[in-house]
Image (cartoon, rainbow, N blue to C red; front, side, top):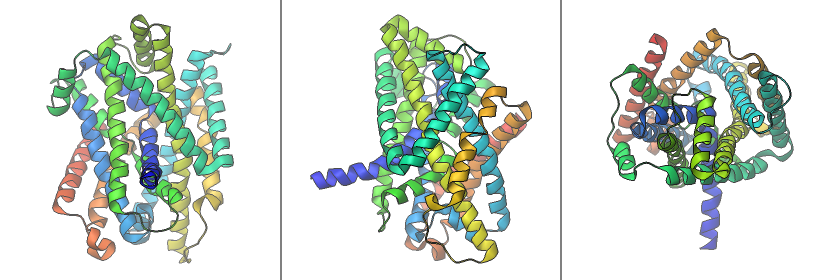
Length: 416
């Protein structure tokens, strides 16, 4: 029994990394604003988003189990080069903007708790930059094992704080259940935009590709049964959905008013203070910081795997080189990309995002999910590539739903 529990903990810990990384600052702020504006009405959108991300991530994992290669390796080696060129350019651009956003939000929280005697922008940049460099240093010194330990601690912290707060202030559990099971929304355009944002954002976007690399770090030898992968990802997306819904429930329960962005987070904390005292206020801020800090740790550790793997595979395809045996963390590309994440995006915290960059980021980000869904549909239906793990009708149906829904979100971003 002890051996079984130890094995289960070892496997599920990778799912915890997925959950901790996928719950980002933007998702929390969006869930908070949705809860403040629409109460419990849109809880179902968070559940739907988590289900769709589970389907996509399971498709990636099935490829890994079937072929022994990552999904990224599969598309670089087997699909037209244009696919790889698009992804490489997107990865570099996406990483800069996401890193800048994470640095900004981590800096915001720290500067709220310990304000520096400088302008707000510089205070945010200093605190965010310090945390960014600290995380990069921890990854350099401690590697995956330290990242795993940090993630377990912080996800425990943020879930205890946020979920307990939601239980205390929830306005109606019967309405929570109804809102989860019965999709409803207002007829205004803003409500539709919130639904689109919640479904598309919950559980991460490009970071879902990191799961295969973390799984390889945990189990360097042997084949991982698909049943264990399903359990792992199931835990990951249940945690993701519970956390997102908890934030929305808290916002609906305390009614912080018509606030935007990070002010909504502080507004919720202030309202919690009137209910739970000073402890409630600071506990919520600490839980929010735990969420954005774990996202930073996960992105700083996981995304360099993608860049190093992509660069290695692309060079292999062009130069017809043999497959190297080195771990990705032994390649200079991994560490150069970690430095790229940790330092240059600090400028985003100082100067903010020019509107054209923000728009390009939003559109390209919205396009990635239908792009990924289409690739999974194509690659996982080739029996010659995945053998007996070829998609069944149910899986294909869910993937088509993912493709159409995320394609609709992309069109909405372009037209909006």
